[in-house]
Length: 315
Image (cartoon, rainbow, N blue to C red; front, side):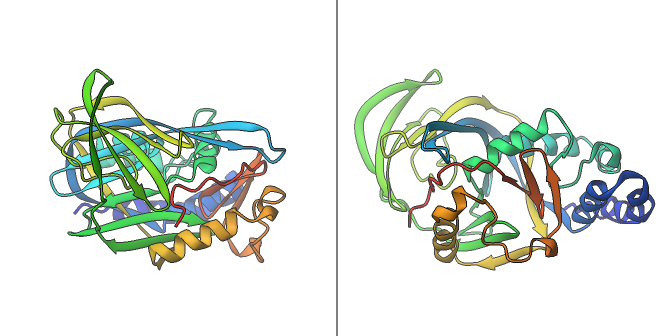
């Protein structure tokens, strides 16, 4: 396992020198970076990129579609589903420790190890989109036989680790072409939603986006409850890439059941549409950076203009 400890040590030493010149935002970024490192736990040979859409409403009840790109890395032993924005950052890091260190220490560009970039015209819109979508990071079969999920109820970043339980799929004879691949159809009830998915047996893996998996071929398309949630394959690369597992000092362990209940209770509350951080009693105790149309709370972007919460997990 390769830990970027040298980078973190160097970054921590620059905090005092940079804080006076660069201001609060840069100092907060540096402090957060010093708390995080990543371990390479596997190597993927398949990179699948999905377009994710969620049909919901804004605070005024107008219909909106939230969108982001999700990356799936398929390794020999495990898979990782997570925002494509983070994958792009990690691809740069993987090109070499020296280049990564240079990038982390460019505090004037406000970059830090979580992959967030406060000031970039390119990164900030992606962060905003992700904050609406509520799609977690999922490591499947890490550790062996387990599913690890990283998600947040700001200011807390939670991690769950549960035994992998097979999804009860119903296979169908229906076929359709998705992304140039002939796909078969399967359906299931999963965490309170009815899913219909298309999978390609020509791509020999049981993987899929988010927590969907367990079919004899890569899942290329998945739709829940008539289209409230939809994953559609956008790109497939047969390329080698490290699969990282993030370790953060601010992560709190919990159960999957408790996390789902707490998210629905928090984001499903009517007060959320009036004030997205209504439930945070002491905002100043978190690492907070105020931005246009929102803020970063412990590295998680929180919108000022919320949308109705449509959880992937209903129970």
